[in-house]
Image (tube, rainbow, N blue to C red; front, top):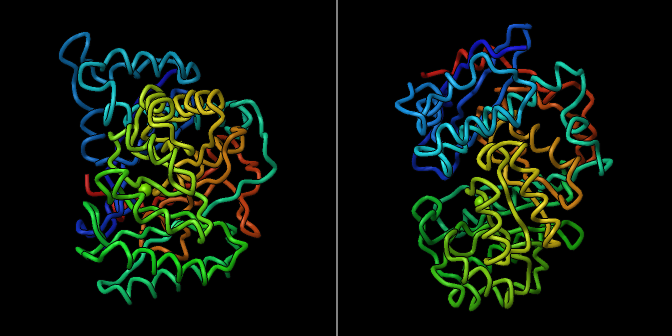
Length: 389
Ligand SMILES: [Mg+2]
């Protein structure tokens, strides 16, 4: 089999708002076509125009080749060969960040093709399932511009998630710092009050995670507040400090009363090696597209196992990424939860409309996928409606 074409569509929801902290309002849909009529789909969680440019640009020299030219004519079933050729052939521009994020979308589409060709779900190609079901956590983002509205909206989302059968919930609680929701500026005590209200609404039996989106500058500042959060029995605290402050992460690991999670933006196993071995984080959060696809995510899983840590993949995107994440989770022993943006509890149109997930979701649990490849069904009408480039 040979790759004959690679298409990159930029999709943006009609209600997208650049002032929101939500990357699920847009996507880049990567479509790989073959001479045997099998088509693979992938996406990645990065500025979609940047990814389109990275994939479609002509090359300029041997260290900066065209991704499209590298792929055309290659056998899509030789995924490692495609991955390495892309990584080495674009290393001067790529190697980390967006270059690797683009490879991630391509890798996802190649696994989709391989699954369709062999008539197997991707988790089987990865080595089979080590879990019977996967527990997704409902990822909740509050609305409102005052403390009271914010707290009440999170409590309402939490109660709805509980009623939908979710066994775990993550609240974004970010009312100050660089990604403060709606320009709010509330002190740390108010954050404690929001978490207290959400925990009360959930009751003791549902796992609660908290994401503060890099809101503190140092571990010293973070610890002053999070030491008081022990009583809320938080499963993990996500990104308390800036992603590159690995020494602060290590201190958080030593002194915070809950597990520390990070890694949503990282690309390649090399960045995760630093995060885990120097930053000492308890929970690694690779995003399957951004890290470099399923191929690279499995390498992160090896590092996590070696250091006896936990993986809880990041995923704030459409059903394409959610399905890839589920296949990864079924094959990954250290994976305790996956992030899941409930279509019933979000305003992100593409999450709800772009594709049908490649698995069934019942009783708060993701069931073992049975369809081949990613198992998704693309909604061609949604592609037409939201395509802008
Ligand atoms: Mg986050």
